[in-house]
Image 1 (cartoon, rainbow, N blue to C red):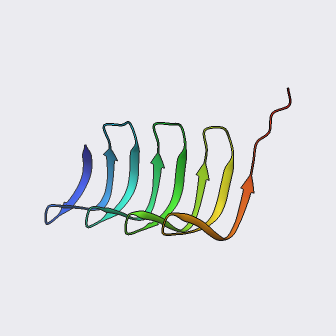
Image 2 (cartoon, rainbow, N blue to C red):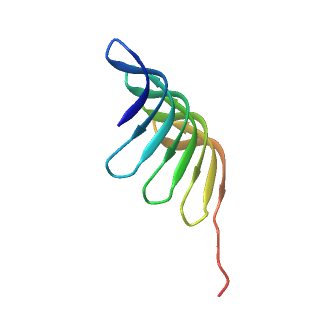
Length: 93
């Protein structure tokens, strides 16, 4: 389901898309692709907040895993790259 602005039958501008799986993206769209600033919340509890280009994380962003681990830094084509900070959560038992 998509709720937001349209241009020539494509998602453009601000909008929210919720997939049947429970995944949800809220942010900027261009030609029905995530493009600009947005937040992905995944059904498994992970989330990504940051920049997108042509549907993929690109530029600065922050990925937070359900277990509390965090990567904050640069992305290209959806992959961590360049300069960033990784923080792994460890539990003492």
